[in-house]
Image (cartoon, rainbow, N blue to C red; front, side, top):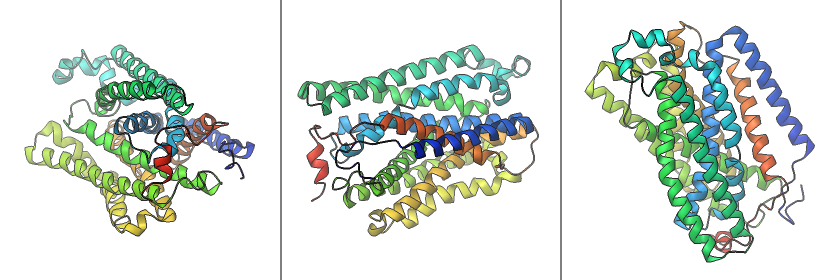
Amino acid sequence: MNKQQNEVFELSNKMQGIALALFAIGVIAFVASFLHSEARTWVSYLVNVFYLVSLGLAGTFFLSLQSLAKTGWMVPFKRILEAMSSFLPVGFVLMILLFFGIHTIYEWSHPGIMEHDALLQKKAAYLNTPFFMVRIVILFVIWITFSKIIVKLSRKLDSGTGGAAVIVKLSRISAIFMVLFGLTYSVASFDWIMSVEPHWFSTIFALYTFSGLFVSAIAFITISLIVLQSWGYFKGVINENHYHDLGKFMFGFSTFWAYIWFSQYLLIWYSNIPEETEYFLLRFHHDWSWLFYFNFAFNWLVPFLVLMPRSSKRNKRVLLVVSGLLLVGHWIDLYVMIAPKIFAHFKIHSVAISLYDIPIALGFAALFLLVVMRALRNSNLLPKQDPYYQEAVHLHQ
């Protein structure tokens, strides 16, 4: 591809065709899985939707982070962050559709169960279907509204109009979003994942899901940059120093994720309260034990050992492989969070991840990529008018 001369991304018919074909395969697999096991299918649905909504939300998060921290090195790939955030309206529709699987996924949605459970009765004012759906709407209204405002100001900054006034306004909006992000993403984590096991709770669960969001987003950004650069974009703009910084983020936050993972386990282990320990006991047995331990090793030990040398963080091939592994690894992490309780409830005793789950995940991934690529289409990938652009081009030089 020779689009780097004017830095305009062009979405070819071939790329669209591949994405649409994978999406179609995912839809077919979803239908086939639904006919085979409704419970398995809704588990896969929730895992993929939460994963992709988190990636979309991460786009707005990193745009806000760049604005507040005044970091120059992130400026060249602002368009990728903006494109990621464009998935949020699609994610909203997908989450609303979860209503049709709510009785399969969440036991608190059954009045009969609530009536005979003293603990759940105390949570009934919060854990009920109407309020659950209202919270989904509120969360996405906040996310989409701030996302559109932040992207609009980011684009305005690149247009060369507004100057310092736009920078100040963008920083203020970003600061407000960051506070709301912490609150709303915590609510989303509690509602959509932790309430799958309504008796269980963890005081650092939201931080745990956030750490997964951060690592997954860095991995996706890294892959996007490497692929786009191989297609002829970002030539002379993205250099080894940018990849080194991304590699350091990946290395550091993989370890942060592992720290939160172990902290959550340790706090529950030494308190030894039945309502808390059931979460881990369920994952220590049957088909889940190997995946539970594999999840920890895959998401921390592999990136920790591979990315420890400085040379690895500056090697695009190594970063591409590690980023791909982390994207898969944190999908597995979500699966381990969501599936065991539902499988136990429906007495599903089989391999933890089925053959249906893989094409369904590919279909959702294709949908996400299609939305992101269409958001990038015919837009200037390089925000040359951004005040920090030149700092980014000459990073550490």
